[in-house]
Length: 389
Image (cartoon, rainbow, N blue to C red):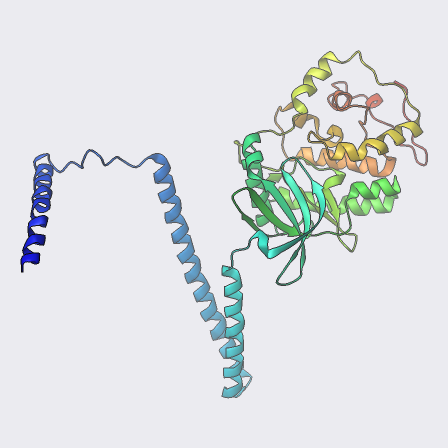
């Protein structure tokens, strides 16, 4: 009893304090205590995002459950029409339920970098690298694109990465590289994509120099299908070049590297062609500088020597970039078709139509207001000639 009384005495002052506080709140007209602040806009956004996620999650669960019921009813009807015995039906249902349970378990599994065995590096860019990897559980081979978050934030390329991921998830076409899954950790963002062992178009052109008309027609036709598939979803690639045209094991072409793609209805994505900052100034102030004249064979050798270096530079080569993109004066889907025309020219001639010793000279040729044919190498069947300047 004594212990109970002592505990009761300890609790009494606290109760009185609470009652006083409650009474004070009532006298103040029900106002909240001073230490309680209104939620910030960031908190409200997080609450709204969490609410949307939960609603979508359970909506998807109900949809999947309804689909399972419909599939089961359809199967029962087919088995009844086929006069299958009850024992065979039960065995079939148990087998299918087990398979569906395994599928749902795999679907809930969160992928991580530990689920893959990293193999050879096949590419390196400004934000990360691309490696061949093998999934440990199945042994399937994929291409893992590893992007560094801090570098993307520093360069303001978060929206570009989101656009790339959304495009790969939305567009279902046999002409572009497939995205299987994506995940992230504290430092990197990972994209698990289809591995294409055939190399890229740039390597093919380096090996063969010039393609035949039938070969060029085949690859250009497949590139047209790839570009059209992303244009139907209102995306512009903006970086069509031989390095981004990959070949599968059967020789068919797939479009890749959507890091500079842009949705037409998005105005927040900034431009990423750093060479364009100086392109217009170079076209105005550098008219007096002329490149040394070379023979046709020297021009081909110079392009083949510098092609690999230009491909892996952070700025990139402007040989395939449309003039409206370089000048930043507004453009649409037609910029991708300009790049395709430059690639077709290179396939048949051996080097791009506006190729020069340095990128600034190329920009001056691309942005030439006269649109004269002296800026373009004249294609001649058998032995192309460089016009005199």
